[in-house]
Image (cartoon, rainbow, N blue to C red; front, side):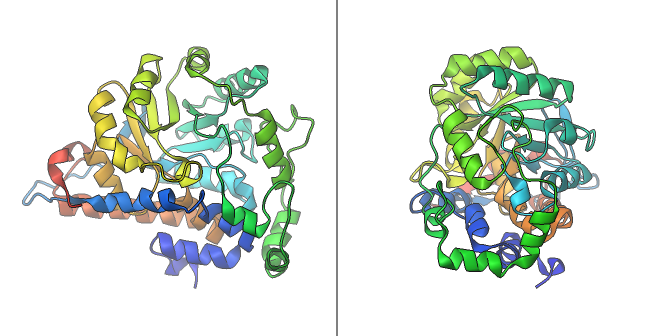
Length: 383
């Protein structure tokens, strides 16, 4: 199987599974507890059916949208994911360049292995930095200032990771703290020498944005886990988010919003966007899917905030369903991480191109010349 044989999420997933040591594949693929929520995130889209319109004027198609004051070529962008260089040596650079090539936004994680400054230089395409509030508030303020200097367009505060979810696949492979790799896991690393070669030959792995400030080290997956457990502040409340919004004073999203009341609160404290997200099902299993919550949240705050649907997106039709239900855009994580693991920047470019092609094709079949033509009148509940 080669990159050119990949046409959808499952194809990229299968190729990534071949190329990654098993513990790393399962780190991407796995979720919390019984992984019900991770499955539900995608299955939720099957609860509605699209209703196409016929004989519409499709002489000019427009897939673009505006988010955070910047124009995106399509209503889909790359969500923040940590430690990306574990999955391919090109890591965050590959994803940022692929997003720029596609004319869409790239999101850099606090737990990235490439610095804010270096990603800021990749392109002039829209960029967002995802931030956690640290116990060391000085470090949090410093990250905000660095994003301002690097001319990032938006900041995103993740609020659903006060404690790590129970990811039992990682326990089985030994990818926990302290590490307890099984014989099978160690054999898997040994059977993937190309991954090991590139990992050892590439730039040193570390959390590039905090490495100079954290004495405990951030140069291995284990030390990253230790960093998260020791540095993230579990006492964060709404006033802390409001303080960062005031310091940033630019487009600001809160990621991890899953209730109407929290969406209203986000609008009240000055957020310009929310990302309806349950962290890909990696935190609270049994949680509702983002798409399940989208219509009621859109009804409540759709005129006050830009709404981003994050979680479960596998097809262009999923994007159209989300937009028809009130989202301004959608974001993907696993849907670009598997292509990255399968083929680096080329893999991510191919995945984004396939998504764009599907969105365009489905818009034509829906009789929609513009994303603005999508509305709740064009889907119905089927279960």
